[in-house]
Amino acid sequence: MREIVVSSSIKVCLPEELSSADRQLVDEARKATQRSYAPYSRFNVGAAVRLADGTVVTGNNQENAAYPSGLCAERTALFWANAQYPQVAVDALAIAACNDAGELDAPITPCGACRQVILEVERRFGRKIRLILYGTNRCYIVEEGMEALLPLCFSADFL
Ligand code: THU
Image (cartoon, rainbow, N blue to C red; front, top):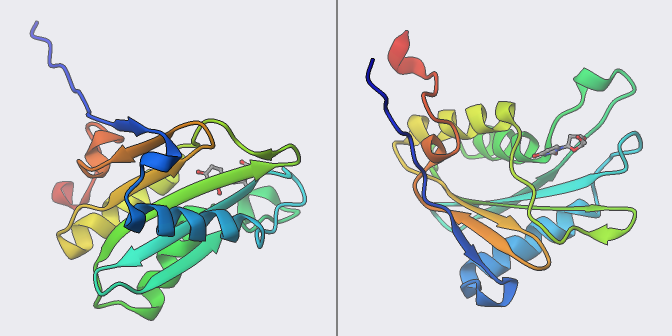
C-alpha cells in the first residue's frame, strides 16, 4: 500500500498585518454580521465577496425555524453575487463572526457545504478565490484555492 500526503498552506497574520484591500473586505464582512438573521444560534456570520471588477457584495447567515432551511453567510453572499453578476469572477471572500460576547478571537472557517459552493464558483470562472478569515487576534489567508480546504474534493470533473 502506498500513502499520499495532502497538504495545504494557510497564512496566519494579525489583523493589523492585513493588506488594505484585505482589511477593507474584512471590514465589510464584520459589518455584515450586524445584519445577519440568527435568532436561533445567536451566532452572526458576515461574508464579503470582492468581484474581479472590484464590486463588493455582502451576505450573512439567514436562519429559519425549520433549521435546515436557513443558509450560511458565505453561500448567501456568493449566490447573491453570482445571481447579480453572472459574468464576473469572484476574486476574494472575507468571513467574520460574532456572538453575544462580541467578535471571535479566532477566525471561523467555512462549513463543508460552503466549501463545496466556493469550489464550484472557482471552477465556474477558472479562478482561485482568495479566502480571508477574520478573528480579533489572528487571521487566516488561503491563497491556494478551495482544494486546500477540501482535499479529494468532488467536482464536475467526475460527471
Ligand atoms: N454559519 C455560517 O453562516 N457560516 C459558517 O461558516 C459556519 C456557520 C452559520 C450557520 C448558522 O446560522 C450559524 O452560523 C450557526 O451554525
